[in-house]
Amino acid sequence: MKRVYIDGYNVINAWSDLKDLDLGAARDKLVEYMINYASFYGAKVTIVFDAHRVSGNSQHKEYRAPIEVVYTKDKETADAYIERAVDELGRKVEVLVVTSDNLEQQIIFGRGAQRMSSMEFRVSFEAAEKHISEKTEALSDRKGMKLFDHMDEESREKLEKLRRNG
Image 1 (spheres, rainbow, N blue to C red):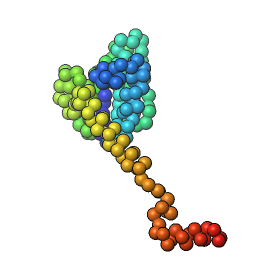
Image 2 (image 1 turned 180 degrees about the horizontal axis):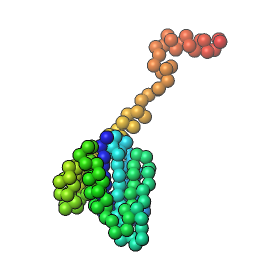
Image 3 (image 1 turned 90 degrees about the vertical axis):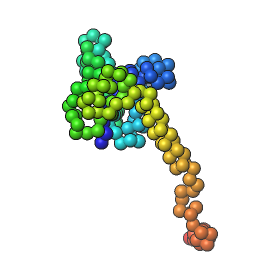
Image 4 (image 1 turned 180 degrees about the vertical axis):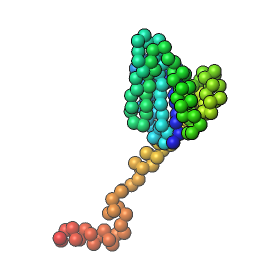
């Protein structure tokens, strides 16, 4: 299974529909987006939000299947958390890190992970959303999912006769 680590605030600040929301709503919307993304790609997604400017904060994790949301501890950046997580995984699994921080991209790449900017990731996310939407629409457009709707006229008449006459 592919592992995806997302620098949450980096993505929020890069995506205009998230940047215009208040911070709490933007985080919630990003998590909602990533639930669909993770399900579509069969990936385990971890969204990491910095708490390095929040004095006395300890690391906090939330699980919203199939998403893990991490709020880093006091004085820890999302970059540091992601680097440590990539190091722990080693090169055992495929890892993608989403950040537009060029230095972070170089560090991650050197540790064996793939990297993608927040805007490139938006394109990947939108492709998944489009595919999900098309598939949902195709399923809802199907006419008649009942057996009766797929029977020939003669069989329908026989069943109707049995229904009326017992």
